[in-house]
Image (cartoon, rainbow, N blue to C red; front, side):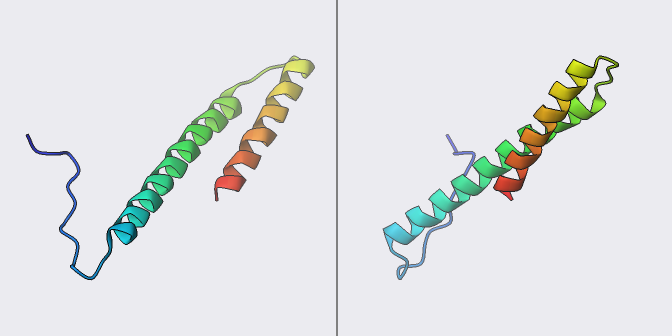
Length: 75
């Protein structure tokens, strides 16, 4: 059974630790990307909501500020 993710054989001068570090860095990059996508979906959801209730509007604005701050941290 073939793996869905295959790695090319590493050159002999690349150590196992270097390969592991590269894999870990790629994993972290993908995780940040997933988090950013999830936050952007939440942001879009908040922006699409309409309300005339001032308390609800304040809560949505606070949530939007929080999400945008989290997105900024990921950048």
